[in-house]
Each structure stands twice: as structure tokens, then as C-alpha cells.
Length: 462
Ligand code: BES
Ligand code: MN
Ligand code: MN
Image (cartoon, rainbow, N blue to C red):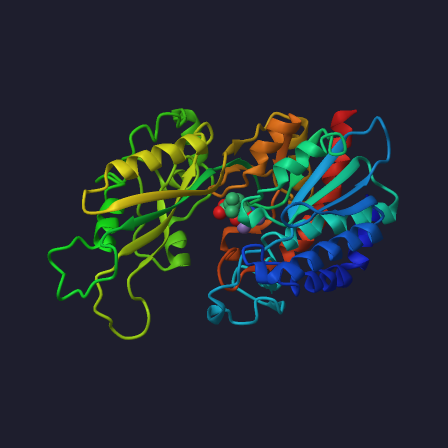
């Protein structure tokens, strides 16, 4: 392992330069204008895998963005780890709020990152974290110390729902056969409080349309006598939470697992500073479901949030209009056992049922995904915990996250294997937001830790 770590130390600068190169490619999956860059990013990663020593590297076309595959099989009797990550990124909007170009990576120091952080879209989610695996692999290959078989599957549609990944996995089941999946696409509690993510929420995402009159109307000539679809939509949305901030959709909580008092007490032990939380996002008070702590609200409880709402006139100045239509995009974060298809249907039925006769309501489901919980009593979890203990000098805390990576449940369904979510980001990385960044400490800690994971995993599977 000394040889591996020495190689990493000696190649630190280049590892950073290469990540910068990747971050300069705006591989935004949500916007087809970036299709060329998406395929450039895929080719870049394939080339890096090949240079690192992977075999059978292929940029596999799908009906959407390509998936990169590569492998190194070192022994028939050694365990096989499938590394998953994504090279697509969220749009950079609103671009004007970035202090430096979203695709012009720079290092800046922050309070949480006194050694500097890489500012660029995708630096933390997920190019930076995915690339740690490519570089750790390179280091293990260069040192001639690869204790497990590795397969890489890096996709380009995670941020738009991984629509083609399921088909790819099913069609390539033999090629992808593995003992476990390893992902770095989540975070740590803090740089001095290592943690491993053991739960992810599911997601149901819908768009709703409320239609009133057959055309936009003069709000003076008609206002007062015709229901305004925006007003109605707001009423309908407001009714989706009750006075305790419980979601009012019938059946919504049916499959929600209530944690035992012991489990909740265990969760409450995780370090969390409410004042710091509020200060970090500039709010005076937290909000949420009655009876649950902030940490619980963002992890073990489901949510319903409007992500965008529009209609009528939103341009400069004032236009007096009673709009014909109102729209909203609504997401529901779900907890394990809640089925996203069932929840989407419950929402759809309920939302139509509460529509007053003045309007018609349509619901358009988008992508979604199931939540996941990963066990802590498996060799793969223990190997990750040991690896982190070695490099952080502290045992990591298992923690459920509020975010979603729908493919985790899918991997279990298709391959029957468990996933380890060994992420190195921080909640404060501003992923999906302007000024996304990833600590240099975090990038290098990831590269350093990953080889120990393989070492420990190989030992445990002997
Ligand atoms: N990497 C994130 C998810 C994440 C981040 C989980 C931090 C836990 C901690 C991922 O890229 C993501 O953004 N997922 C989407 C869901 C997807 C279906 C678009 C999300 O959570 O909004
Ligand atoms: Mn991600
Ligand atoms: Mn993301």
C-alpha cells in the first residue's frame, strides 16, 4: 500500500489538472444543446480509464447519453467491485450568481476549506468524486497492487433520471456481474466527522397544469368573475400540507416505516448544530413536520415541495392579465418502502379530486425512483468503514441521506448486490447550485481512501 500512496503523492498535481480538464467540458444532460460536450466528456473518461490500465474500455451508446465501461480482472477467485458514477452535470443556471465561470474551474479558499476547494459545476457532483476512482485505480495499477477485480460503469444521465441505465444493466448482466457496487456520489458529515451513507430517499416528480378560461383574459374586464388558475393552483398546493406540516394526500404515509425509539436515539447522536445549519443557508427558523427533528425531516421522512411554478405574465413591467393556465413542478422525496409509482398515482388522483369545478387539472409524471437502505453488517460496509478509519483516524458514522440515487435500488433488483455509498462531498458543496465546489482535502482523501477499501474488502472476502 505504501507504493500506491507514494504514487498518489507524486502525481497529485497531474490528478488535479486532469480533473480540471474534465470540469471544463460542460456535459449538461438536461439540455440537448450540450450533446456534443456530453460525448466529449464520455470519450475523455474512456481515455483516462484506458491510460490507467483498464481493459475492454468502451463508450457504449444508448438511446440517450453513452455509458462508459471498463474493467480489470486480476483473478478469477478475487471479489469483483462495480464502480458506478456519473459524468453528466446539472445546468449551471442561474449563471449570473457564479463568482467564476461554472466551467472554468478555479481553486479558492473558504472557511470550511482552508486548503482550497475546486469551484466548478460537477466538481463534487459527480465528476470530482467519480474521477477519484479512476485515479485510485491508476495508482493501484501503477503500483501493481490491485487486490480485487474492478468494473467501471460511468453514466451520463443521472441528473435526468438514469432513463437508459436500467436497460443497459439488463442487457449487460453478465458483463456487469459483481459482488458489490461502490459509489462516491454522496457526502461526509464533516471533514473531521467521516460518515458512510446508509440510506437514500426515493423520488416522485410530477408536473401539474391547471387550466381555466380558454384564453388569457383582461384582468379588469373579467377579474372577480372568473377563477384565476394561478390562485387556484396556489390554494390546491397549500392544501397539500396540514397545520402540522403533514402531507394530506390519502394513503401517502401508508408504507412509511417508523423508526424505533432506539433507532431515533442513535440517529440523534450524529453531530448536528441547528444554529450552524440555519446560518449556513440564511434562515431564522426551520420548518417541517411536527414531531420530528431537522435531521429526521431530511432523511427518514417523506416530503412534498414545489420546485417551480409559473403562469401568466412574468416579464418586465406589469401586464394586466388573468391567465388561462398555471403550472407547477412538484417533487416528493420518499423513504424506503414507499413505491414511487404508487405515490405518483396517489398524488395524481388526489390532485385531480381536489380540483374545483372552475378549472381542469392535468398531471404529468416525470422520472422517479425508489429509496434505499444499505446494511452495515456486510463485508462491503465493514471494508469501507475500515478504509475510512485508516485515512481519517476515526470510525465513520453510518448516516441516512435525504438525496436520491435511484439506481441503488435498481442494482439490488437486477444484480442482487448491495451498494456501498462512500462519498466524500459535503452538504455545503452547493451541488446543483451556483458556486458548486469540492474541497481539495476531499478529492485527495477520496483517492487515498479508495485503495484501502479494496485492500480491506479483499481481506474480508478471503
Ligand atoms: N449525487 C446526487 C444525490 C445525492 C447527493 C445523494 C448528496 C446524497 C447526498 C445525485 O446526483 C442527485 O442529484 N440526484 C437527484 C435525483 C435524480 C433522480 C435527478 C436528486 O437527489 O435530486
Ligand atoms: Mn450525483
Ligand atoms: Mn446531482
